[in-house]
Amino acid sequence: LDRLLQVLHKKQKIVVVAGAGISVSAGIPDFRSSGGLFKSLKDDYKLKGSGRDLFDASVYKDDSSTSSFHDMVSSMSRLTKDAKPTAFHHMLATIAEEGRLLRLYTQNVDGIDTSLPPLATQIPLRKGANGKWPTTVQLHGGLDKMVCSKCHQLSPLDADLFAGPVPPICSHCEAFDNIRTQHEGKRSHGIGRLRPRMVLYSEHNPDDEAIGAVTKDDLRKRPDAVIVVGTTLKVPGVRRIVREMCGVVRDRRGGVTVWINNDPPPVSKDLQDCWDIVVKGKCDEVAKRAAMRKWND
Image (cartoon, rainbow, N blue to C red; front, side):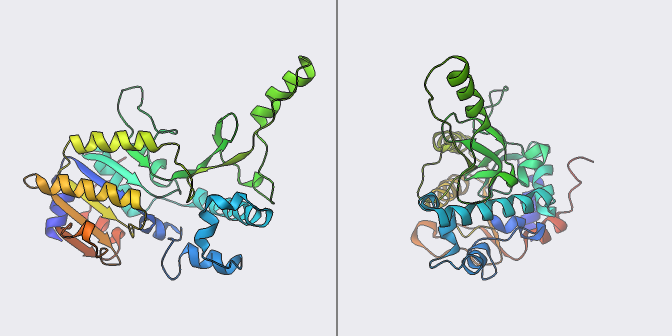
């Protein structure tokens, strides 16, 4: 633990890869544990397969699954809007505010992390006006924005719109189409539909290229610590980022790799001998022991 606290307080170029485990104490269920979202969704919606099916692009193939998906999106959106950042979120914000967090790669769609100013992101993922990538990279999008399938207009997600089997229409497209058909006498170009800007299984991530560019940039900067927290590393793309980061960190003098989770790290060839420090327990406990000043004090 002392060695971990040294990492948290002293390292200058920390990369954190975070999963749902960091938001559990904020009241957001994780995905894969016995009390997690996949299990409860399977029961709630009487799904034949796993609750994971409600996070697959195939939800748009039939009315019943689209309806269940919309229901799940609106209830999760309300849940995340009420959620408060945890001790661990605040610790990450402090490290970022001190200029020592090279990057937070988050698998979470709850937006709790990015609600803290030091952990802000850009949607879509791009460099800011300062020419730098944002501190936080959302690997799977988020539940705070919705996007039109046609004009790609982004707007804050309105949970009330997502009810029933029909995706809500885009008001931006609708206004444009009204002008075109009624005032200019032209034919309709169609009106787009809204969906959460969240990446589902079996679909392309619109931020893919940008995520690749950020990762490349970060590897080039040779981070001095990588902390993997609250994730099972089941998603291949995330696993690859972790493997590459760990390789670079362990290649440099004094580099330290850390695993923080209630469960032990995955046993597999690609992640063999990956970890210098393994902490089995709650990440909030780590944050409390680190006892950093609050980022906005």
